Image: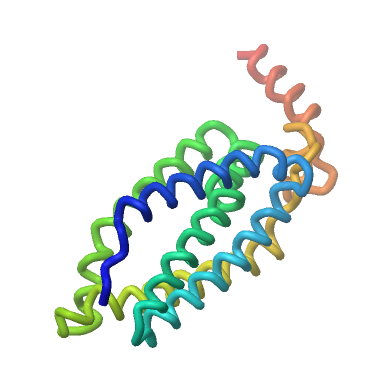
Length: 195
């Protein structure tokens, strides 16, 4: 197989990420957070599964080029959905302590995945030549399925926060439908005043 130009791929990845991150600044207030997460999760799942299927069945150099193009599309879609929107949404619905926990868990999971991925790829098959070519296809399909599952979670659990104040978001996410954030603040300030 012919090896693709690594420099070209690296520059392309950065360019697609930059374009996506710039585009999302306009999209997030126009379409909203929930819509972009739904769109992103569904299209990313599709891209990953297609890339996995091509990687598992490729017999020509054309398959390699198609997978690189799909990865570039994935990077763009990630940068207009999961990448920035998960942080924006978390900041809108969580208190500071919850956001700290979210951030810590995110980085811990990324570290675990980064460290374990080479071992996972190598354990799928014993064939050295196929290990990094074919086994990445299984990884693509696995993460495609997981992303597809996240679509249903977003569809059923996430509420749109576009155009809402912090107080409205807190009231919207509270279990008690009669909950009012302003009353909670008065109670809290009254309790602090007594102590």
